[in-house]
Image (cartoon, rainbow, N blue to C red; front, side, top):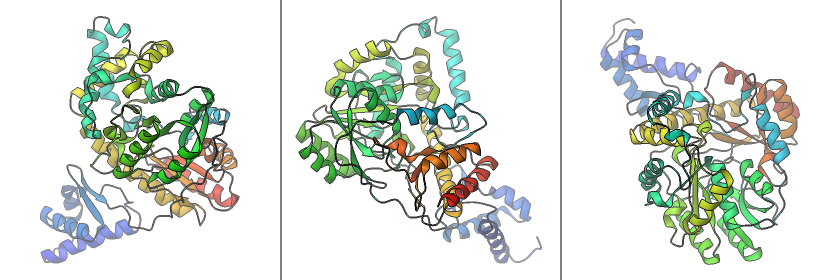
Length: 476
């Protein structure tokens, strides 16, 4: 670069980098070159690059992330509109989603298919090496403990670590209040069995995670879908009316970054929800599996933090953050602790010991928060990129959620698009998506799909999203 006065130099650097952002060389969420690297590339001083970056930061083009560098700022474009609040059936109904769900899960075993249809993080987002090293060391030196049962309530080391971290969610838990489980799915199933029986009605979000629907279906219970806003979560006014009209035995909600909408209920509404259910003596099964994956620094408080009657059964796991295959979850059952421990014993006897110990040591080492900061940034960037691609390639009128955490997008297609047919055509192209009917007790949302963003952004994804958009265009 030709030597010119310092002011002109940093302005030139800023303009060149801004041009690269505008032309798509760097997408929203991308990390731009380090200060030192750019100073070498442009043959200018480090101070010149720093000044150029400050200028671009003031203009909203890039943003600094502590101990990470500079990134292209999100929201440099107008995202698609979000879907409106859902309007599900207003009466309890039996559930029928298992057949379709198993078809989607079966495809997840095929390595040739791009897995955008299952809400499982790609291994590259997980601390796999660190966990494997811990697991191997414990297996070598634990003198046989890993081969024995960790009967309910489970590993004391892990329960102690969970109790220590509970303050982040606004709770003050003791290890004795926690029961470990084989993933969050078992925790939810145990809770439903503890508070309800076949034929009872369970209030759920709409749309709701199909694993929840499958569990309700398998237990012979009925689902009452409550209208849900993609931003604010379950409508408490609608829930209040439902409680007055129907005999609801329990509620099962994901309050933080729900799957598939990504909704996050405000703290005041969580307090109101707990009070409302306490007035009716109705248990709340709180699925907090995505609670640690918010894009902001502040973690939402769990509804359990406001529970004074032991009616909130808090469930979570490490499947979305650390290791899906370890199958380590947990529940804080409140007044139902004795029932949950008994059901856990007769259901699976114990949670696998070695994975519990490995996760407990990983948490004890103190690297979990640092890992979460990095992973949250990756998910936020991916959600932004996927949304940008959907806005670019999908039919005009497509609506997309704007989650503040997690890693899934709910896409509402215009016109008479058929998600089941779109899934079939996408599979021919080796792309898996989750069709909307999976997320409703009576298979509503036929014009909607869920897309998982927990897959590394690269050539494979960049090819797949335009193909999906073209297939959707053809259907519309």
